[in-house]
Length: 264
Image 1 (cartoon, helix red, strand yellow):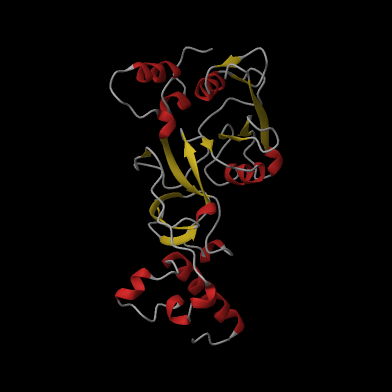
Image 2 (tube, helix red, strand yellow):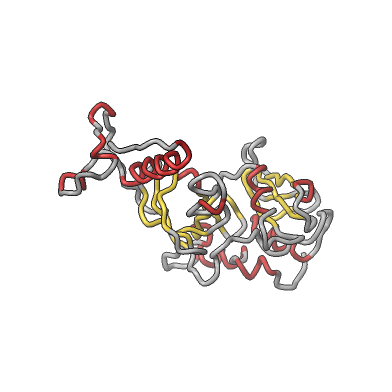
């Protein structure tokens, strides 16, 4: 393993530093608990110019209502309610939670990513394994993305090639940032996250979700959806603000294309 300090190493704590933290008498928050929230889709869907939130943008969660959350883009400052499954957590700037192969390729093909840009994701086909996705060329074709399976030994160590094993994914990234050892290219910068500069990462557990009680749609009238009643009673509405926002946005877009009047 190389002795130089790699780019990826500067973005995350080393294995030795993690061990030192774990052995400390003082309570600490480990690096694995630090993450950012990133958008996986444009919202509202459709042409990007009509979207408030764009794929690849870093988000600040303003409120969490379970299936919906209100977010602010760190890249544009836009605020919007979006489905919670339109977002993902990213640890160390390169470890993505619940990311598909196709979505990994889409993110790595976004502007600002170059040869060597990479991310690590959970394998969808081999439970307990991870995959390393690397942009190996600067063109915009999906074949310019190379995927490597990261296997895990019974003792928890990771490897791509059986001859090289690493105690953590961070150690693996550090090594392949210094030498290829069979990879298509050196690991360079992690996949670019728009709006990631000068914004502190989130530390600790995710925000507490504000759950609405289960509702009977027969009890929902148009006033609850279109915010016609803004008194005290409306604050306790069974219809969440996120859902009302989504329905209003949908009707606004369909009104323009169909010519219907949606007064209710």
